Length: 319
Image 1 (cartoon, rainbow, N blue to C red):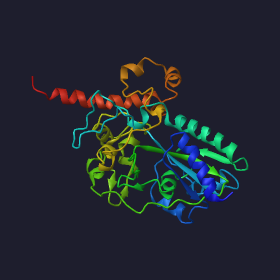
Image 2 (image 1 turned 90 degrees about the vertical axis):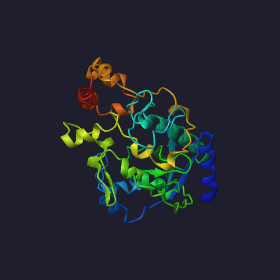
Image 3 (image 1 turned 30 degrees about the vertical axis):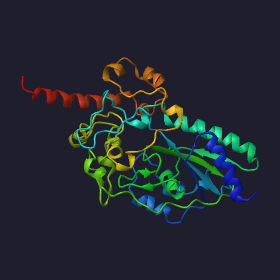
Image 4 (image 1 turned 60 degrees about the vertical axis):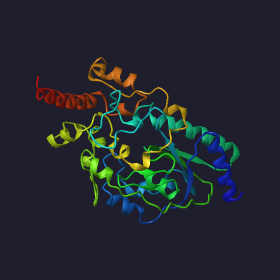
């Protein structure tokens, strides 16, 4: 079978699952990619070995390509924040948008398993290895190389249809596929993401993850005074959406066609609700939520930080 015919089978299988954004990357990946990943100062949540990250063949012997998919997560009920501070949401949501539905890792894995099952029937001689963003693979680079988007100054992948509100997954495969063409355009360069970043983590010379609020809401241990002040600048207690919500490329971002991202949503958690659970009960109750992976105590710490700011603000309001 010709690579183009194989690609056609894959695209049709994806379309039946409403996976509209799919592209292909040929292997091996570029030789200098590992060095580029090292220079980008990856956060502690990134696998430390850059060479392992650039060798999908080690995950699946005989691999020749990667099928890359975007999973849009914006729900129809999600609305953009105001164009200017303060960033407060109607209804008091305090969880980042990607973490409001059930754990996206599970949702994406289910879709990949369904896709793999269909492809195994149609391409019985080929093998497949599914991955989401917990794999060692450089998913944003793969999505870019697969022609699924281009990078904003907030380092997020911008897709023409769904903006930056996507997560990335795919299948490493032994099938030979025609490589997609990366897009040549770039973001508008308005610098809104840099201007409004709560921690000023986005700079002209790179990204400083230590000042990123999303990172700080997941960091273990006590927060420094500076870190606490960064966390207190917006309402979220897990994650941060500011650089995405102020991005002009997201003004017309379509909602996800995948119903799982609109169902069973939890937009807000409180200290009182969390205090009702033991650590064991918390893990059992919220095992299927992406924001629960760091545990109850980290969330309570973040909630206490925001409550402290609210108390100080109330003290300065005249009677």
